[in-house]
Length: 159
Image (cartoon, rainbow, N blue to C red; front, side):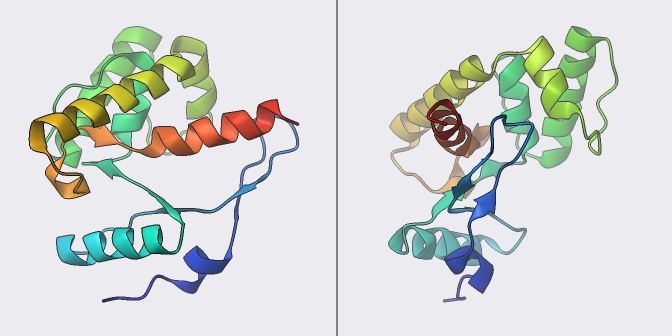
């Protein structure tokens, strides 16, 4: 098994603005583009070390899409990005730019963070019920990033 990178084991992720308040720390790791078996091993090892492994399949745009509406099914990152880009343009009247530093602010303005969390939770639940497994690579158009955001929001509220 490939060991988790040391920064996953020991560091805390800092979340300053735009999350608001003074920010804070949380132990989280985000998956990297390794092979499926390695990815599964990393997630399992993270769980054993009590590190929450946030993932989106096929890509992070699944999480972004949830701010605006229920993300449609996508098997590839290209499909997911295209579908999110279309929804983003339809709703905001702006082109989606993956490097846009103000994307969070735009999503908060035109979308709904609480609904994004609810949509993502429901998608995870229904995916698990239909597939009877929690393997990230077997669940398409699913993200667990909502759990990180939910944790951050709770910590910000308690400041």
